[in-house]
Structure formats: C-alpha cells, structure tokens
Length: 343
Ligand code: ZN
Image (cartoon, rainbow, N blue to C red; front, side):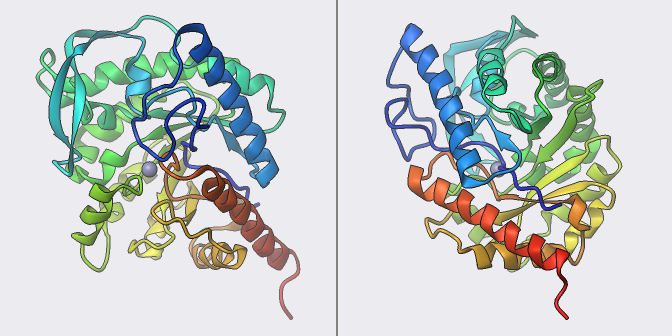
C-alpha cells in the first residue's frame, strides 16, 4: 500500500540539456546525443531508486518536451512549418509544428529508452505519453479541420506506440492530459473517447495525469485567476470514473483543489500529488504525510499512490531528487501508522 511514484518528467543532467528550463535544446547531436539520452534515462531510474520511489518512471530524459517528443517519428507533421499558437485556451503562446497530412507512426518513438530503462530496472517501471487532446492543443492543424478527428488520428498512433512499450515490458503506461483541466465539456464529448482509443487493448496498468501544469510563470498566473476553489476535476472525474483507465494522477499539495473531489474517482487508483512542483521548498516528510493522511479520508490505502503534482523538468536537480526522497519518507511514515494504529 501507498506505493510511491512520479507524475512524469525529471530534470535533465547539465551535460544533456540546459538545466532549469522547459523546451531546453540538446547540448549534443547525432550518435553522442542518442547515447546521452540512454545514459540520462538509466541515471534517472537509479536516482529514483536511491530516493526510495516504488514505481519509477523514465523521467522523460529522451525528449525535449513531453508533447513534441512523441511527434518526432510521425508522418504528417511539418516541423519546419512553425506556428505561434495560444495553447491551453491561450494561457501561453508556444511555437508549434503544423499537421499538413495524415498522421501515421513511421516506427518506434520511445523504444530505445524504454528498452534501456527496462534492462536496468528490476521493479515496477512506468512510462509516460502525451494524451490525444493535449497533443491536439499543442500543434497547429492544416489538414484535419476538426479537433476530434485529429485527436483520433493521434490516438491511433499512440496506441501503436503504447503496445510496443507494453511488449518491451513497461508495467504502467500513463497518458498526460493537462488539457482535460481546460476544455471540460470536450472531455465528455470526445476527449475521453480518444484517450480510451489510445489505451485500447493494453493489458498493462493504464493511467491518466491531469494537472494544473508545470511550475512556470504562465501557469502560476493562471492559477491565481481560478479563484479560491479549483473545481475543474469535478467535471472530468465522473467521466474518467466511467472509463477503462485504471489510475488517475492529480494535483493536491499546495493546490486549491478540494481534496474530497477524489471521491468522484471511486474504483480507480488515485495518484495523489503530495509534492509541489511550483516551489523549490523541499517538502518535509511530515508535510508529505499530512497530504497523504488527508487523501486517505476519501481513498483506501491500497488505491492510494503518493506522487508528485506534475513533472519536475524545469526544477533544479538536487531540489527534485530531494523532493522525491521526502515523498518516499512521508509515505513510509503513514504506512507505519496504518500498520500500527495509534491507541
Ligand atoms: Zn502535469
């Protein structure tokens, strides 16, 4: 019970990409880059193990960004044709590639790092992919016209990739859908259907991560505008509860999400964000334990997985791994309490 895990990305070593920055360009190229991505993946796994994390992830070391990394080996995308686009409902602008033809997966996208991760990890291993709705929200479209049609085309490519990852031996495949917190009516209309399409036929554990974004200024400003209570999950959780996706990763620590909303996820595993990724303050184990105890009021210990709020890519190396150590220590405190209830 209370198996710890991470939401997704981890900081990259300074020899691989510029630290403390999202979308940081690579520092190497060609064969040297390919090998360095593998090295960084193995390092991320070992450092998570040292921090005491139970279900470790690939740390997204081999991709510049969690969305565009997946697009690298698809047909139908013109990477030279950059469009400046407001994403997440115009929360911030990004320079994005453009869909100019039918989306098709040319071949493996993440197979190399997934195989390396599997080879060096004996225990549970998790791998993340972007969800269809979030990809659609992070790319310009000149071919499909309707967002739901483009999302379904990406879902097909994601499903092929996910099946390959499962065959490599990945235990948990998580789809990241921060867009689920922005376009709530569309989640019910087509977002969830395309996500289920991406996950169809998988026999490994499946998860979806829904958050309020990385700890970057645009997201922090956006959160300030959301008022005293963040109730976005209230719309999406019932839709997810009816789906085939088994786990839901969400944001709790230092957020204004009313934690009792996780009641709406009855039957699912809940990955409770007990680490704030928008702050460099390294949580104490006791602070982590307090978040877990709060969530335990609404979800059983065997269904609760202490986790980070979101990815940690833009964070300092020591801060991120310090937080992961606190996460596992905090979970250990609560595990002990559950085994020996206070008299
Ligand atoms: Zn996130």
